[in-house]
Structure formats: C-alpha cells, structure tokens
Amino acid sequence: MIQDVYVSDLHLGAPNSLLSNVTDTGVVPGTPSPVLHALGGALRSLMAQQEDPPRLVLGGDIFELALTPTHCAFDTFGDFIRVMFDDPVFSPELHYVAGNHDHHLWELARQHQYTEYIDGFDRDAPLRNDWHVTHLLPENDRFPHGDVTVTAAARRACPTAGITVRHTYPNLGFVGEVGTVVYHHGHYTERIYRAVEWLDQIFEPSRPEAQRAWHIEADNYAWVDFLWSTLGRSGDAGGDVGALYEMLQSEAAIEAVVDRVLDTIIVRDKPTWRRRIGNWMLRLGTKLAVHEGLRLERHRGGSAPLSKDAERGMHDYLRVAVATQLADETGHPDHPLTFVFGHTHKPFASQIDVDGIDHPVDVFNTGGWVIDSVEPAPLQGASLVVGDRHGHVAAIEVYQQAQGHNLSVTSVSPQAAGFVGEIERRIETHRPVWDVLESTIADEIMQRRRQLARRIVVDTNRVKGIEPKIAPSASERRP
Image 1 (spheres, rainbow, N blue to C red):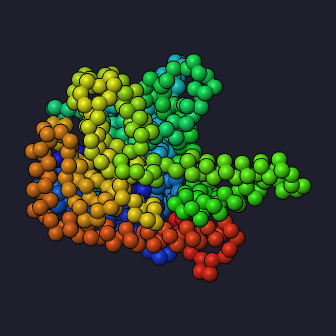
Image 2: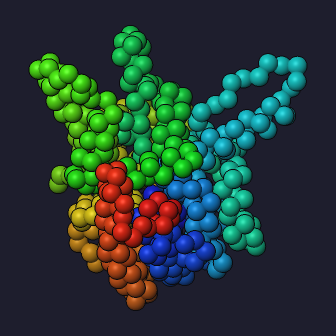
Image 3: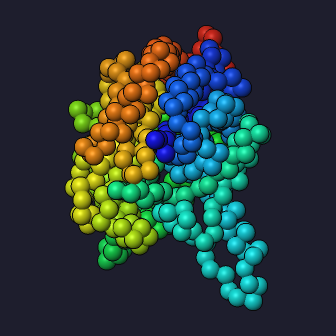
C-alpha cells in the first residue's frame, strides 16, 4: 500500500510551470492547467485500489513566490487543491517542507509558532530565542509548526475537505519498519544557498564547519529568503528579476544585460590605455560572473544528473545535517536511509556511500514541473516519489525532456521489488489515464518553450531600448 506521495518543484503560478494554466495572455488561475487536470486523474487512478488515502508531502517550491505575484501563486495552488481534494486523493493532513522559492512560507510558519510560544510562556521567565529548524520527526516537536498560511489557502479552495498543513523544515523524516525516509527540498545541497556560511568562514577561518541543520539554516536563512523568495515580489522592479532569470537562458540576452550594466559604470571620458584595459577587464569579469555565478545547478549541462560540485554538496548535507538528526531522534541511527529531494529539476535514482552513515544511502530526486529553457534540457523532467509503511521507496518517472513518452517505475533497493511491481500493476490497470497525462505533457512542453522564447525576445529588446511591435501583457512577461 502507498503510504506517502512526495512531490516538489511545482512552481505554481509561474508561467513556465506545466501546472499553471497559461494562455497567450499569461497565467490565468481559476481553471486547472491541462497537465494538472491529467495529473489529478492519474493519481486518483493510482489510489483507486487502496482503502486508506496516502499522506501528501509537499517538498518545496510548490508556490512560485520568487518570480510571481503572491495572489497568482496562491490562486494556482487553489487549483491544485481542488483537483486533488474535491474528490479526495490524499489524507487531509498535509506535510510541507519549504524550498528556496517558497522559503518565506517557512518564515511565516515559524514566526506564527514563536508568537504562540510568547503568548503562552511563563511571563516571569526569560524567553528563549526563536528556532530556525524543526525536529526531523514531527512527533518530536514540542511546539508543532502548523502552517496557518498554507492551511488557509487550502481551506479557501476546498472548504469541506478539512485540510490541515504541518510545516517541518528543513528535513522531514518517517521511520518505517525496515528503513527511514528523509525528505528535503534540496537547496542546501547547492553551494550558492550556503553563501553566507562560506563568507563567514573567509573572515573567520578558525570557525568550524556547520555541525547541524540548525547552523546551516541560521547562517543562510535571510539570504535564501531575500534572494529567492521575496526579491521577485518587490514592487514593479520585482518583474525585472523574473525577466533576468529567464534571460539567462539566452547568450544574446546575457550580452544585452551586461552591456547595459557596463554602460552605466565604464569610464569613457579621456580614454587612455589604462582605462581601455580596465574597461576590457571589467567587461570580461562581469560576463564571467554572469555565466558562472548566476547559472544554477538546474541549468548546468553534462551527462550526469548532478555536477561534481552538487555531488559534494549532497554528501556534505547528508553527513552534517541529516546524519546528526537521525542519531538524535530516530533511535535507529543504523537504519537503512532513503534521502528524497528535488530542486535540481533533474530526476534520478541512485545509491551512494556517505561518511558517518553505516549503510549505503538510497537517493531519489523528483525533478521539477517547469520548462525553463528554450531548447530541450535532456536531463530535466519530473517524478512522483512514493513510499510504503515499511520504508520502501519508488519513483514514478512521469516524463523526461530527452525521451518524451517514457513512463517508468524505478527503485534502488532490491527489497523494494514487490512494491515496484504493485505500482506497475496499478498503472497498467488504468494505462489510458496515464497515456493522457504523457501526451498532454508533451503538448504543453512545446507551448511553454514558445512562450518562453517570446518573453526572452521581448525583454532583451526592452533592455536594448527597442519597443516591441506587440507588447505582451505583464502577466505573460512575468505573471
């Protein structure tokens, strides 16, 4: 029986999300996108043969808060909830693990929890500081982090379902009979999201490396919240952040942005050979910074789903942030571990050895549901990760851009073979429903690429000062 379903990187509300309803005029919430409608049908068919609905784990970047107005993200989340709960697919008790693009939801949840703590604490005793992380296991939290914001949004969309949302961050764990499964969004496996931590080590070389998830989040939370979860909503200027993010996919667009930036700072009066060399070096350095500093893991090519740097980051995060929580909380530090994350938009399943963890770790990446490049990104795609009460985990790979129609069920551990077989039988029983999902995704991918290409051209011309012949609406450029 399926007990957990983990999804991440839906980026609801973004114009490049397959689960946002996007027309030629932009994102139009209120009606489920064709892919969202088909996904709901596929998941409903998957659960049709079991009596108890599974719990849904929302693994971060569910809301696109970085590059989308709040109301658009929340309205599209309402579409998602209606599809999944008007005829319930899941248990009404949802679990949320924030990512970088919706990190602000975690900030709201923990501040609400701290407010309740202040209100109920002994008024004659000194308060303790607010805390940056939760326990790994929800049952261990003395002050549960009910996510009132996401709960309110879910209940607004489907008032009769009785939905409640609990926020666990940055790691959520469930102990099964034969193994422990840990869910994390994945941003802290990438170095750029721990930039403040590394910066502090530059100025204080004697400082030891982070020892726990708490230290990682305490050092970097403001940086993650600002740049990836709030900056894109900073008034009218926030729209330019979204435009810049998309323009990084085009060499011509990058050139236009760099030229515009340098035109404002390059010294042009009384040119001398020193100024010419200085300007040339400034231009070269700026281009290198844009190419190397702003390209995230999801945009890196190569034949492997993770770059060498991301592999090191994943090993480091498992060794520091996950292993310590397992040892502190589970009572089964020697249990086989499965680590599930998203963030990179490149689904894969593998097994790795990690220092400090006794058994090889089964690793699953869910990929993502966005099309953020004009040309096909061969490694990008999306999976649904499912688990049973024993701790067995499998991935239903829904699509991969390089292969198109390639629905498959995979696992890493041989002990999960029976669970994989059960899922495959369920899918084959309702195969036409899954075929509709695959064909719908293929059609929508082509549409998103065309829309993205148009937005990049329009925004590149805008940077150059060229007015478009037909200007797109604000919601098409950035909803």
